[in-house]
Image (cartoon, rainbow, N blue to C red; front, top):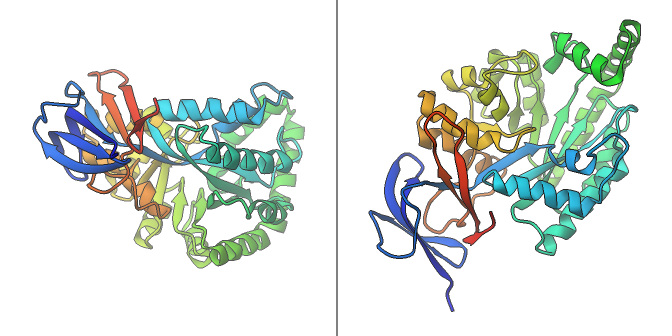
Length: 379
């Protein structure tokens, strides 16, 4: 028997327009799109119905696994708590960011990451999760262990995106190290002398290990067919290096020059939705709004606040920074296409019925009222 559901009386956010209409869902797919009311099914009361959000970069899961210093929570419970918040934020496809190449002061290690990756695989197979989960492996290339860490994670069947990061001070994200200083002194209670010594070690590690790790990991990704992302490119030289490595996605470029060069080279430019919501970068770098105005922003990621995606969409639309369809594309179709998920990301016949019902509130935070994954309500 065919499972059918009708969502009626909605403002449908299509690729290039918003129309008053209804959807027919059948067997987890969008079977038909109709204008006007169907006169049957579930009345959405004129709420906005948009595609399910596609999140490519969130390390939010770590906060559930490590809720307090030196406290490790059960991995499955932590994952389910993370998943529930992800789904309630309208995200129906999520790339959980795990990492390799941790510094010695980190509260988490490679075994934690490998086991968390295995937990995601098992939970997905068991049907425990509301959103559709994949893995984004963040590789800190300045660490000696980055390539070894990648080798221990590469067999995970959900690994679908890899990024190359280098957070050494004085370059990329931290050209201006005042934010770096404030963060590390507050977190580790460094004296000024201890902070300077810490920076010297990080810079030396980057110079020693980053080039080889970038080459090894990028070559392996090309061989495995895994999309590769750069991270915090700041200069034209950084962009040229990314192009030479086969990078397809430029995450969080820190300058307009780097973002424009990446975009012109065919790389998809990703920025953080918190940057939009807050009105700028917490590190003092280029704003996402500036890149959008320049026509070189392709994707938004929630980064560290899952709900920031839907907030950013309506903030951009309400302020006139982007039309609602254009804002929605940044968090749905564009990220889906960037990682080869062509079966989702738009309200179109035949695609997955991954949908979010949103109730906009003028001048206030929108309400995510319902979330559907493959036609089944999950939040």
